[in-house]
Image (tube, rainbow, N blue to C red):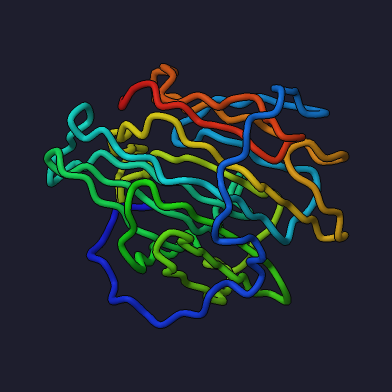
Length: 261
């Protein structure tokens, strides 16, 4: 996800057709913490969360509650906002493409704002409508016949979008499925650089579902996929955000903010 441009006008998108979870869905009680069948760990700039690899994927979804940013602690500036993003996607790890949608939070001179967006990277993101801290969401990416359905529903407000888009490059591999909290990278940066990571506290993802090209359905505890637990670090390898072990049989986890740089 790249730098936030001016918001686009709200379009009259249809609600995601594949959403079948009641609007009253609540964050589930924690099950006992368990390790997935074949967990790998990765450290890197930008991402915390989980991804599955080992085959081609065609569907990923997750529910989450947008955390309230602590913009007193990470105020950002007009020219260097503190930012974060929660999203689901296909194709992002080890590739130069990713098809993703979710929500972003921004601290601008201590003032928070939040938006729903979608992106077919390397094309720029599209910011669709403003959202609010505390809202609950379901985000979905679905691949079919060369196109991606990018859907998001805000259960709290009832706002939603659902669009079909092609790969943002000449080819997409669909070689991974992700549920991620991200520190967005800067647009057109000549060297690798991220924005300051906005303090989002704890974010919980649940009702995670993944489907591969063979039709196998699962989550981050499903054989024969390789499941990677991501820890976000800065360029000096200092930890910025950590990720819990999965729980609820691999269908839920949490990310924890640690520092902005």
